Figure: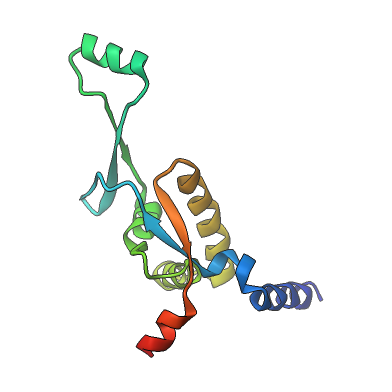
Length: 134
């Protein structure tokens, strides 16, 4: 009974594509990153003047390196500016042998977090582009 309700909610959301987060396309804004041993390392410049001064005092560069775990690195590499959030969730489900709903929940939570940090942005899915390429 609960699964039927959930399925109905998903179908109802699919009808309203304007507000369906799964149809948004994430794009990477943070271009200063590298792949090291299969994991993504993001280089973040420190902009806080106090932290910059302290880094200068101890003769360090005012930069932070953030190493993502395996799952987050996989998501980061799938973000290409063409795939929708739902497409990435399907790829993650195939990669980690999980169901799509669970992966979609995890993915949306992660994407919201990195979006708030300013590392990615979202654009709306353009159906007309898909029609041209099919």
